[in-house]
Image (tube, rainbow, N blue to C red; front, side, top):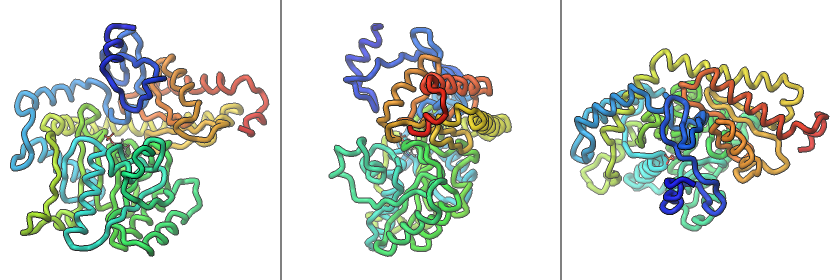
Amino acid sequence: MTELLEKDRNFIWHPYTQHKTAMQPFEVVWAEGSFLYTANGKSLFDAISSWWVLLHGHCHPYLIAKVQEQFSRLEQVLFAGFTHQPAVLLAERVLSLLPSQFSKVFYSDNGSTSVEIALKMCIQYWHNQGKSRKRILAFRHAYHGDTFAAMSVSERSMFTNPFSEFLFPVDFIDPPLRKSERGQSLQQMEAALSKEEYAAFIFEPLVQGSHGMLMQDADELSQLIQYAQEHNVLCIADEVMTGFGRTGKLFASEFLTCQPDIMCLAKGLTGGTMPLAMTICKEKIFEGFLSENKEHALYHGHSFTANPIACAASLASLDLLMKKECIDARKRIAENHSNFCKTIGEDTQAKHWFKDLRQQGTILAMEWNSSEQTGYTNKLRDEMYSYFIERGQLLRPLGNVLYILPPYCATAQDLEQTYSTIMDFGRSHFGSVQSSDAWKEV
Ligand SMILES: *Cc1c(COP(=O)(O)O)cnc(C)c1O
């Protein structure tokens, strides 16, 4: 063990890590484009965009230049009673890119917090009017972050179990997954809304990330939003993962015919270089806080609200994101993915390895057949993780769901390498069995 790893073991508590059994971490020394380089001379293709944040690759020279420029002018200032150019220009820019008319941007610094703020906005919106709308409606299999309100509106699981008594009650309905029975989610929403006046309905639009890259039908989701809004329920689209081009459009909400009242953005906002988040609302919500009564203000804020360097990084990232080159790259990645799915479908062996292949834009999810139930603790997960790392591929399967969510600078050759490693894994894992009937039982 190197000296640094020894100090890591002595001093660090890592996220999402059972330290009793975890492998020792990889020490990353530098990174460029789609690759991470480790202290022991390994290169890793960052096929999951460093936890879904990276857009244009690591250490992009344009982002570095813009960040340096901002750092030397204004690096941080309180955001109550003060403002600055990067925050204002970024808000104006993001509002102009959204699929419908949003009005105000509230800054914070991570996805979970952007969700907390969205929920607080909704709850206080009704409180300010003296209305007793207190319950929240959410989707099963949801993930909205790790702080308490964000956990409350997420699927209850081993991640939230120790805190269950401390989470506020939420009603859950089934998401309108592509494979589920049509109309089922709407029926559940109708039943829920007939019993309760909800403050808000929160959802990950089109792709539910953490619970296995589950993918929804856009028309059905639009119907749900429309129905909720007809019943005065405020709709929150958590686009923390789906924002900034991942799903094939700039925002997943662009696929919808009915728009949310609040949108949460984080992860890709700064191109994955720095923590920054936005909770964006429609005018009527902002107006619900305007009052002569001081108690009607939203008393929420963080030390680093709208940090100028993070805002400058975001403006620079948006410059790159809107370039034809980047738009073409996103299209090409989606094509690469769908061609790979086609190849699998035509492969007499490989087509039996998967329970489901699903794709939305640049996100490809592959659910392997497994004797165990689909889920985060599925044993295939550790086997796959090690297999791919040993072959220079950073993939972090969600149980038996392997997914690729690459940065937009990933080349066709990079992806080809990932695809062929996946095929190798399939052959080595399922390969000794010859008859295709053998797959059907698992
Ligand atoms: C990652 C994620 C969050 C939480 O964001 P953090 O920045 O990790 O706190 C919230 N919602 C969704 C949909 C996410 O994917």
